Length: 342
Figure (tube, rainbow, N blue to C red):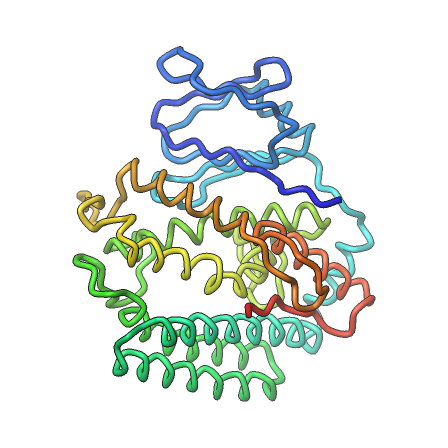
C-alpha cells in the first residue's frame, strides 16, 4: 500500500493553530477558518507570523507530524518534531560512513551524477519545446557541457574534488536560466542570491527550494536517517546535510521545472513581488498561494521510478530515495542509486 503524505501550509499572517479534538484548527481573528484531522497530515509548514498552541505541538510530536516555522520568504527558522524513528544501528553506520573519505566520496558522486543528469534532461526538454533554433542551440551546448562534467565526476575520488566539479557544473547550468524563460517581463537571471533573494526569480527559487528542503527532512526522519549528517554537504551547526544531499537530484525536476513553468505560463508576474527596505524581494500572499498549490499538484504527478520500475508520485520519490540511501548505508546496495528523471 502506498500513501501520499499530506502537508498543511499556513501562509496568513496572524493565524493561530490549536488542537481541536484530534484535529488541527486554523483560527484567524478568533474565527475557525479550517479544521484538518491530524491523521491526514504528515507535516505543517507555517510561513511568517503564525502562532501554534503548546497542546497542538505536543500532539503533533506524539503523532509524528512535524511543524516547520519559515519566514515569509521561505527561510527555515525552526521545527517541532517528536522522537526520531529508526534504530541506533542505522544512525551509527551513517556516522561511520560520513567519517570514511572513500565511502563519502562514493555517495557524493552518485548524488552529483543524478543531479547533473536531471539538469541535462531539463535543458534538453526546453530545447525541444522552444521554436527558436538559436535558443535551442544554446541550451543543447550547455547540456553538452554538463555531460562533460559528468565524465569528470565519474573519475573524481575525493569529496572536495566532487564539490568543485559540482560548483563548475552549477555555474554552467545557471547560464541557461535566461533561455528557460520565454521573454517574460521582470524575470531575468543575473546571479544566484539567497539571503536575501534580490529579484523575483531568486525569490521564487528560494521559496520552492525551502519547500523541497522541508520535504527532504521529513523523508530523512521517516527513513530513520539523521537529517543533519550528509556526505556531499559538510557538517555545520543547524545545516541538514543529509536532507540537502537528497534534494540535489530533485532541484531540476521538481523545483526548477516548476518555477520556470509558472513564469512561462504567466501564473506568476513580476508585479506581484516587492522590494523591502533591506533590499530583499518578497512575493505577495496570492503568489505564494499560487506557488504552493502548483507545488502540491506537481508532487501528485505519477512517474515511474527507473531503479525500482514502479509507478509512484513525485511526492513519494523523496521518501523512496531516503530509504534507498538507508539500504546503501546498511550495506544492502553496492551504491546509492539516485533518481534519474526521464
